[in-house]
Image 1 (cartoon, helix red, strand yellow):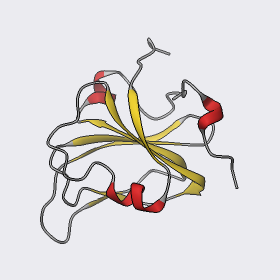
Image 2: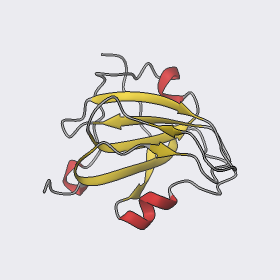
Image 3: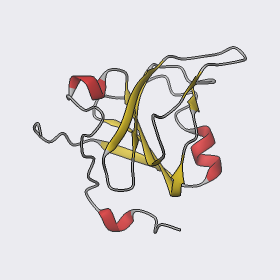
Length: 123
């Protein structure tokens, strides 16, 4: 319902890229982040093992609606806490900490890719 915000996202579309995520990055610049693409709905939790900067994550359903948002803190020790979605999701978007709250993005908000044809086909 609010103004649109545009971000540039790296894509993690295979299992190894999704596992690596933003690990080891010394910073995530404002307006950038990573999108984790799945070919079908999942309910996987995320963690911050070996991630150096705090991040915000939005779990996004196949229709583009945000399922839930969480603030995640870096973790170097085992076991690291996990961050679970409020329900099944198709995509997850990670941005610098506080980005979703600052933009007024929460559950029910709409996330729209600039090029929807680049998304994987549902399985």
